Amino acid sequence: MISSADYHLALENLPVATFESLVGDRTIFVIAPHPDDESMGCGGLLAWAASHGRRVEVLFLTDGEASHPGSAVVPAIQLGKIRMREAIAAAEHLGVPSGSLDFMHLPDGSLPGMSDHAFSTITEQLRLVIGKLAPCMVCVTASTDPHGDHQMAHRLAVAAMSGLEHCRLLAYPVWSWVLPAGENVADPHGFRVDIAEAREKKRGAIAAHASQHGRVVTDSPKAFVLPKRLLDRLDRGYEVYLEA
Image 1 (tube, rainbow, N blue to C red):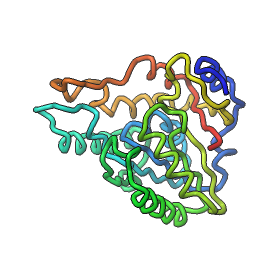
Image 2 (cartoon, one colour):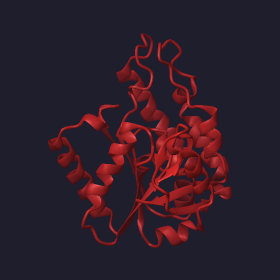
Image 3 (cartoon, rainbow, N blue to C red):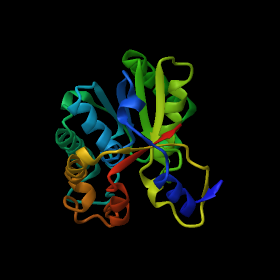
Image 4 (spheres, rainbow, N blue to C red):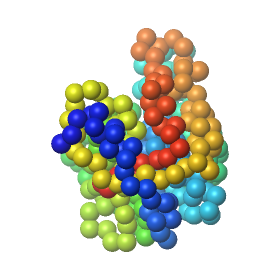
């Protein structure tokens, strides 16, 4: 175990790899707990895949409708639809067609409390998708992300991948980049991949999630805005993919 400060340093010093070496001849399947996680964590990968004619599928577990609770102007059901449209717009920035996106519509914020039956059902659904895409590389949020939906997405992916051949599972950190001081986490093992050629596309994709930058909902008593310190961490010219 290492401290959160050492964890960030370890991420920044992981060995360098290329998308070619990580992906091989596999299809790419990105699992995102919410719209915007795919852009922040995998925007470079998705842009690379699109520009190289590689098949990509992105699955959003939730619509992200709970990010601005209590708004009278933009209720949750409407916000979910807005965030779905933002995900499509972000994908366009990356060169990924809307037909490569799918939404599971699970309740935002509810994943950690799902029943054992729901866990088994969703795991089997993911397993069927992965099986159809095989050989594939599955990317899901890191288990160290301090967000319950992100952690459960990771657990679901691990369970769905159990026993599947010709598939690889990697995890992408999002909120792990801003772990609170004083926390201890496992030493990360994985790779850094240069995304210089896709950096502007990734910036455009992240910006397309306008609701998460405070540009859509203005009356929520618990308004959420992506913190600058997180966005700065994600705008480093490389992405990190961890062995899951």
